[in-house]
Length: 179
Image 1: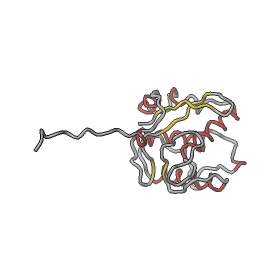
Image 2: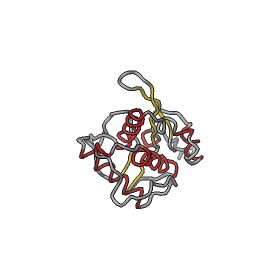
Image 3: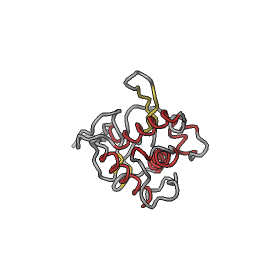
Image 4: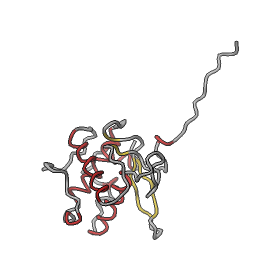
């Protein structure tokens, strides 16, 4: 389930970061509200933040309409994920271009497996930075926006620090009463 983690910037200013519980993309779990979150952030980044194509962040080629926030992982959502990863890698960010948005562990924290930046962390940072730069609250106000599906708004009202994918829950093994 998508959720909100409240983080602090280097200047100690709190800001919301939106995370997923399970991976989204090519071989991800693709839980509906997790996919909706990725779609909503990609929509903000590519279609609502107008006027920053001069820094090299254009929507994917042949993407004429904004990405739908419908919770379904299809070719349009997948092409946006791959395109975003290739763009931030081209800008010098150490990002794995695998077509997957894994949950991130913390802002700027590298993956323990690939030692690269989590793409979803980079997308959150980009949305937050460019919205602040343009003086709009499309990113920070995501959980309250009426154009966001109700299921995603409800999920983003959940505040926690760690994605379920990284939470160990010990399993109790039932006993049979002995041999």
